[in-house]
Image (tube, rainbow, N blue to C red; front, side):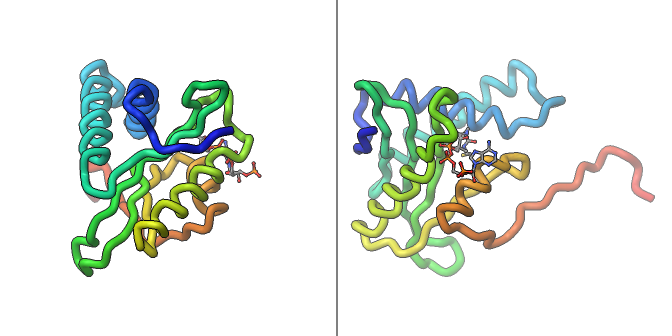
Amino acid sequence: MLARPYHPGDVPFMMQGAASNAWDLVPGPERTPDAWMRAAGFSYGNLMTMLRQPGGTALVLEDAGRPVAFILLGIGPDSYTGQVYGYLGDIFVAPEYRRRGLSLLLHQEAERYFRQQGVRQGKLWIGAENQAALESAKKAGFEPEGYVLRKRYTAPST
Ligand SMILES: CC(C)(COP(=O)(O)OP(=O)(O)OC[C@H]1O[C@@H](n2cnc3c(N)ncnc32)[C@H](O)[C@@H]1OP(=O)(O)O)[C@@H](O)C(=O)NCCC(=O)NCCS
């Protein structure tokens, strides 16, 4: 398995993975065609924005000449503390390559990249239902920093 920086030929694979990740975050009842277009559009915009930002890149794992996994990386200051941190924007492993340790390899390569850039802290955001990504991140050494909470205001309050 070859780990390398992305090149423009990887963008279609990364667009597909990023769109799939965004769609995974849309709750079942909200999965309309419009929501699909929004998720795909947003994830594409986010991918391109992160790749164009200073320090932004993606690392790709290649098998037999084709991309099979990627991790999208950015570097920026924390809004409150100003401390620079590395942001892991998207991580995606093609379904047929899962459970072979590739996410851990991507985390390892991401850490190597951030260290080279002088970055000493990494952060990522994971949907509450995504047990695979959570377990993988924990195995890579991440721990919770905070919680994003939601309450649905559907039923009348008591
Ligand atoms: C999450 C994801 C990146 C994990 O990639 P992977 O290469 O299959 O994971 P690994 O093989 O490196 O697994 C590392 C550890 O993570 C955990 N893990 C991975 N997949 C898991 C699953 N389906 N259920 C529970 N734990 C899981 C395990 O602890 C695993 O270690 P083990 O195999 O020794 O038990 C992959 O499932 C994926 O691409 N999912 C869709 C995209 C996504 O959800 N991305 C994250 C949101 S941005």
